Image 1: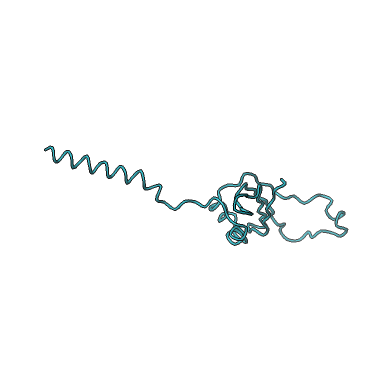
Image 2 (image 1 turned 180 degrees about the vertical axis):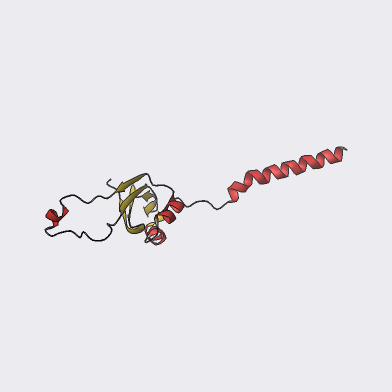
Amino acid sequence: MALHKKYLLVAGALLASVMVNAPLMAEPKKTTYTEEEFLNAFGNKTRSVVAKQLGEPLKKEQSVKPSNASNIIGRPTEKQGKPDQVEMWYYKDLVKYDPKRTYKTIELTFVNDRCVNIAFFNNR
């Protein structure tokens, strides 16, 4: 009987240690990228792909065309067709520009659900 209890105790301890260490063995989510890695990973990707990899952005901005846009550019603006949907997403401290420092702000610009522009800033 004592042998049976020792066996159960050892099996329980082994199972507990495996369950505690299992999350540690999972693939860690990448927290920083080099400029080239970030451009290759997210350039021309959809919003859903970016959100899946990076999570929701800290801030989102919707682009709006001014009511007097044709006066500003000096020609009539196009009226036909559906207008483009432009949205900017902002992330912080994801891209390294040297081994110890990261850009403060990363801006991804989406036009019609595709990332068409990526900008890195330290002055925002």
